[in-house]
Image (cartoon, rainbow over all chains, first blue to last red):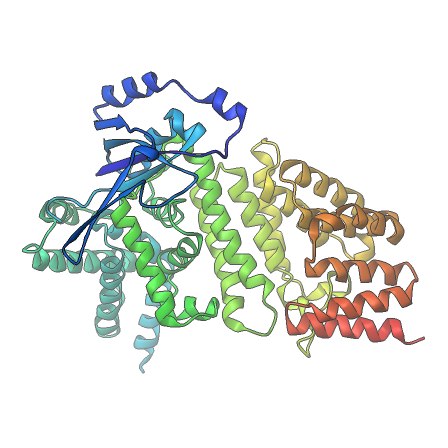
Length: 112
Length: 415
């Protein structure tokens, strides 16, 4: 199973959570070593986002993300896992699990 | 119906009761398809109804049902093979050639356990976990589950479908969690079983389907305890549900009116069930672990169950158990129950003082006023008790509860 992991901010965490957060380099070494990491990166802040639509044949370009929210997507990773439990395990070791939140979204399989 | 037919039907009912979950769980493991698993078992049951009365009951009815269900799954998958997901189904076909219900080695190899962990996965919505557990592990029909939760059959069907889809789409594996996650995932299974029980136990309006729900939860807790025999909380939950369910018949009188624990006819308690509950509690204690959430509640239930009369109740130990429970998992509802126990241990004035300490956290939780009314009645303050009973009756959550509070109101209003 392939999962897209959205890495989001979340203001709802404590100083102790931040202290307990593991090092992101350690996480990357762990997922890469395990052969579970397909690709991933950091994203610039939501203020740098541009939203694009075409309506009635007209291109509409607007400043900002889809929705204004307290939580922003700040990065993503694509994980290749046996099942959801494995993806949860990997997510739980990410530093942003402690100071933000992670959303796991399964890919539609190509042959599905 | 001939005698042979009756005997065959009885043997079939026994075989289904004993083997259903194991067969369904094995088929789900192999095929990943909840509906296919249930349909195949149903097919095997129908074949048994055709053949057993004439041919006689097979020597091993469970193995017979397994074989027929397995062959049926094989047929269905072969027909489906032209469709998508060929690889998964080819693997399943290969596995369907083998003995399905042989457990994997190791303490957590049982397919029924994997089914429980899958149905109670924390990535599923709670209502879906409850419904799917009742359907797949409990063997209830969609219609029965719908009635138990007072929703339409179509609504419940949708809920089950969404839950099964989430399992498939999110890639929830049919397996036991990693050892370091076992404790929290077991807690999630126990929470589902406990929720099913409280859902059934709270209803008192003479609704037989909800009674079934409590009985089903007792069964489920027995299965979990059997599959996780070293887990003190699984044993604790089984003990708790047995002990509470043992009081079922005495909780209402002949007219269907509520009877408080204090006034219950203890001869109407199910003493076999109490014995079984006490045995499960002993087994939980024997693990040597510090008592957990369910075991502490079972200890409290056991102290009630072993008191010959209400006046013999060991309230000091009950208060101590509530204190331990509050230390473990603070909750205003538990604090309310503790205040009741303090009222019996130290007298109603002390109970009222304990109640004042927790009232602020309970807001307008309806039982709060009912407990206050009772403590005022015991304190010999009938006028204040009457006011409280009147208030409590106005916000009572069920009809029998309201009638009980109005009965008390009349008692304290009469000189």
